Length: 417
Image (cartoon, rainbow, N blue to C red; front, side, top):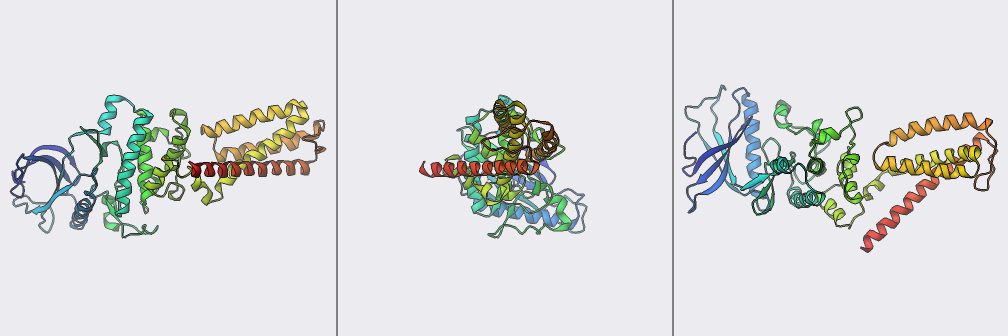
């Protein structure tokens, strides 16, 4: 590599080395103050095949094109230059000679959030949501310009000395530029280079990215939420993923405002369609313009939990009313509170409810014949299995109605605010 690149840029310190090249802190000798900048060099491994090198080079060009457009945002590093140099005597073990490409961009004087976290152990809730809001504004701009970052994590968020946050490393192997529409679910990258282009960071990448499927703006939102968890706890996001079920289980470890928790929770949904669909949607939720749970009404999934919970309480109310007379209802209400708390704290999930209801249903129907019959809410079910089941079904429907009304009231209040 020449000591002066393009007759202008002087590399002075290697910052990092990757599989496809390196990044250097450099001086721009054609500026009055010898401006500092970052020079990224594309230098593919000699072990790559020519076809793979061409693909990586294509993606490096794509990164430069994206940065030229995205650099208009004040919190994305500017692109200064993009050029190629013939490697001269440097030879790769391939059939054809290639050029070495260089990308020059703005240098951010500061530290990334991974470095900041190592000093502070963890961030406060206010600090984390300040980061969240700042990055959401950047993502809103990037997504509106058909670019998906694909590798959001603390080390790719820089805080300059003046406190401003920057989103960096729109790396060639991580950058996707769409054509104005979301990618088709069946679209894939060139098969010959999937191992090169399918780059992600475990714990931050959403399921669709891990599986090599199409990604969407909500994929970046998932990674940003995982980043927030790391900053809040100082623990890697993978420590909050149940290895057996693949579900997130972090609520017991994080003590934050309920509304903020629900926002993070929705950003971490397994299916892209269940998450916020844009950075603006999250920003609106943070400003209380859009109810956090609005997306839940796009499917019938929101009906299941209140119905199953109501059905369970109906069964328990009949059982304890017969067993303990009037105080039995009080006992059932206490269990209802315990169930709500367990779901709120993510101790039990929907699948656990089905198991609990199934066991309860079997036990209640088995034990009812040996218990005395007592009227409940003015109705005498006479320990008839059919009537008891019907009463439990009505309790489930009542649970759905209560949840629906609460959501309706919540939306109305949100719009009033």
